[in-house]
Amino acid sequence: MAPPAGNCAAASLHNGDDGTLGGQDDANVVVQGGAVAERTISCLRGRQAAEGVATVLAIATAVPPTEFLQSEYPDFLFRVCNCDAKIALKDKFRRICEKTEIRKRNIFLTEEVLKANPSICFPDAGHSLRDRQEVAAVQVPKLAQEAAVKAIKEWGRPKSDITHVVFGTTCGIHMPGADLQFSKLMGLETTVKRVMMYQIGCNGGAAVVRVAKDLAENNKGARVLVVCSEGTALGFVPPNESKPEELVETALFGDGAACVIVGADPIPKVERSLFELLWAGECFIPETDKAVYGNFTEVGMEFHLTRKVPFLISENIAKLLNQARKIVNNPNWNDMFWAIHGGGPAILKKIETALQLAPHKLAATREVLREYGNVYSGSCLFALDQIRLRSLAMDASTTGESCEYGFLCAFGPGVTIDALLLRSVPTSTNYFGDDKENYTPNAVLP
Ligand SMILES: CC(=O)CC(=O)SCCNC(=O)CCNC(=O)[C@H](O)C(C)(C)COP(=O)(O)OP(=O)(O)OC[C@H]1O[C@@H](n2cnc3c(N)ncnc32)[C@H](O)[C@@H]1OP(=O)(O)O
Image 1 (cartoon, rainbow, N blue to C red):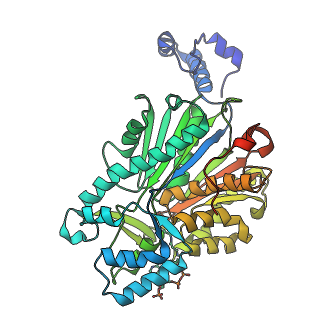
Image 2 (image 1 turned 180 degrees about the vertical axis):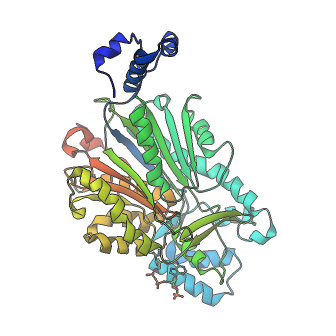
């Protein structure tokens, strides 16, 4: 148990402003014995932690410049892969594309990029994994940088004040990782503390924020730059009759990066909180290992997806979310806002049915799916960005579309569900301040 403040003074600690011990004090911890040392460590622990819960202080997204209309993608894909003769397969792919509810996706793998890296369309030619990794090594940190520059601008403090980076991607694996390349591109301090989260899958969008929450709440003054940067470079596959599930992936995924800045105890008049992060949790669904999974092979990331996924998620999501909901007196699902992973329309429909959500509740997620596709771990963060922008557009009373509480929720391999309980901020107070007229972050989607 933490000792009262008076006891802390008796332990004669001389902490720095940031709650850490100076050199002489470190010695104190070592030489003091018994109860005094316990008290000292307890005080130290208390002084290192933030006072309030972690909050989201800025959000931004970025996508590659080339847009592919979903209606034109079947012709593009089959042409670049020399598969135009596979008429029945192309018709099936077109049918799947039409069902995705996606209008367009931004994808880095343009015809020019694919021609420069022929082993991506024709993996049997060899060194496909190497070529894909080389594309990812450049694109993943670069897209992350684009989103992070925007987020830091919105945050309003210098990038030298970033203390931690949490980086998530399923696009490639390198050592040192994308977190380091990104930190260098950004010109962050060499002392920035990095956490690299490779291959979490799409639940990574909520998992990175969960890790950032812990960092922010346990390190007074921490400001965590959280990035998910994703792309199709590793998972792109030429059409193949014997692997119909790959057509589904090829029809769904898009490239994109999302960045949030997380910190506790926002500095008044300098930082503005967009959402408080009240609770974070994760669960995996037993015996579902083969429902969604990926393997790195010579031809990139071989991704497997079964038709059970929408069912598995919708059947299990309430159990995890209820753990959080009870903390805030069990609001009705429809009285909450929802930033969830736009995995595919069948998943969203099943969740709506399972939780009896009104049609407009997943509007932000559906808008993101429609305009960007399934951007892997970035999806739920794109949706969170969309929610605060929609709140502004609809003149809502809170950043959560006039609701007080909401969920950031994503799912991926495992099958794993990750979720955070969020509290929105009243738009009348510290969100817009006096700047409402001039507040123009990224435009709200049509
Ligand atoms: C990366 C991560 O970690 C997390 C992720 O996001 S993983 C991706 C999660 N997404 C999914 O699991 C996709 C969920 N599915 C969907 O949204 C929809 O089923 C869909 C858009 C793919 C199709 O829409 P639908 O309304 O179900 O259309 P439906 O007519 O049943 O199917 C269209 C075709 O796709 C095929 N199909 C659908 N799902 C399939 C699957 N999982 N595998 C293989 N084929 C599939 C159907 O057999 C059908 O083929 P035919 O036209 O030849 O009969």
